[in-house]
Image (cartoon, rainbow, N blue to C red; front, top):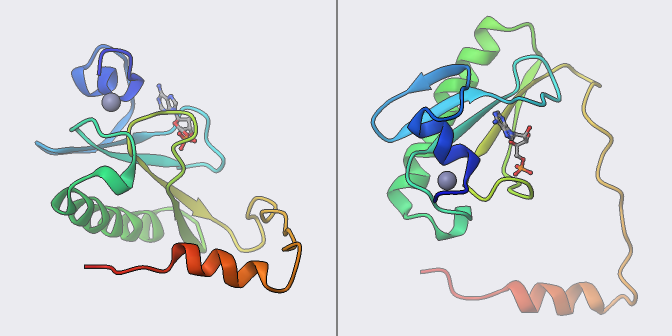
Length: 132
Ligand code: AMP
Ligand code: ZN
């Protein structure tokens, strides 16, 4: 993807501070960290959304994330390691890896209410399906 900032990082056209690299994956420091140590893991293959990646890429992404989380927990002064998948800003699947201290989490997502007691069931029915 010509306009993808993460593809440019993979190609070396945009600099980054690497923490891990192999043939298929790259992890680097987030340029706008929400905590000291905030990093991103990306597959080198450009796919926008996690749900559109092939299973092998997803499996390997999370195994690598697990290994990086241990490294964060063992080497940074954090209480736990938060991970997240957002993708609102950069259209190249990535996993945020964020060392966190107890009680230092970002404000929780605001809680909403369903309009009626049945609406939560309607939403559940829309989501329910057959997972092969
Ligand atoms: P989102 O797509 O909402 O998951 O957020 C994209 C993340 O990528 C944000 O945390 C940005 O700070 C980070 N980001 C964007 N451009 C760069 C860059 N050139 N180097 C490192 N991190 C970046
Ligand atoms: Zn890309």
